[in-house]
Structures are given as structure tokens and as C-alpha cells.
Length: 186
Image (cartoon, rainbow, N blue to C red):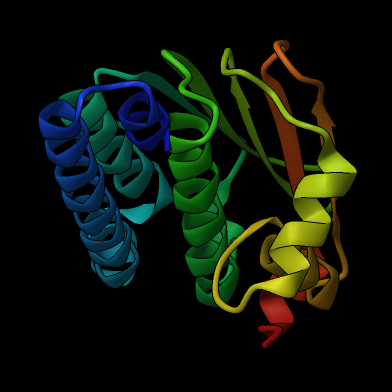
């Protein structure tokens, strides 16, 4: 975390305060992440995926000053509940990553139902990353992350593609087969 790096070069009083702030920021981040995922079904089921994503975008605009644009294209009413929940969870995780890891100031979220596929695209102007390294780190953790998103997409007959490089932002496409969305998946 940046605060901890600053603490390494600060005087002892400033270092102690910076470390305390870093711990508090970490606690707030974990709490925010937890609340977002707990709220997913309510946000999605009471108004649909578009309403849920707009609430998520509003949260990031208020909490982090990250400008998030949401666009939904196609007949999203055809997408089954489990896929909708996973789309929301993936969008929340990718926005969290853009804000907290990539330090993005702008992000766009697109959900598109077209030609038998449901696609989520999240793009940002953040610091970017090396996709293979991030996937490997995520695979070794438990819980949420890029690897989790990819495995869920694959379980629904889809996949995930990542376009990113350091200092270039990122674009993550998560695709589900529309027929899988009607069957239900995991």
C-alpha cells in the first residue's frame, strides 16, 4: 500500500500515523468489498442488472471519486438470475480492482446481450498490470479475484480476456454463453 511505502521514509511519528492510516484504509476496503457483495442480490433483483450496476457506480463515485459509466445493451431480461448475480459480482470485483489496485479515475462498465452471448466489459484508465502475473496471484488466493471470475465464466460456457499493461489501464471482457444463462450454471 502507498501509505506503508511513505512510512518507510518518514520520521517515526509520521511513520506510526501513516501505518495506522494504512491499517484503517485496509479495514475500510475489506468492509466496503464485503458490503458490495452482500448487497448484490438485492441490488440486482430489485431493479435488474442495470439498476444494480448504476448503484455500484454511484457508490464508487461517492466513495473514491472514480467516474464510472454504465451501459447495458440488448435484452438483459433474458439473462438468468445466477448469471446476473455473477455478472454483478464480477463487475464489483473489477471496479474494486480498478479503484484500489489501478488507482483509476475513470471506468466504464458494459453489459451486452448479443448473438447468444452475455458479455461484461470493464475498462479503466488505471495503472494497468501484467495479466499473467495477476491471474497467478489470484489463483493462489482464496475468495474473489480475476481467477475466480475466469473460472465462473468458464463454468457458464464462457471465458475471460484481459487486455492490460503497466501504465496503460485495463480492459477485461467476461463472456457467458446465453444458453448457459438459461440452464443456470453453478
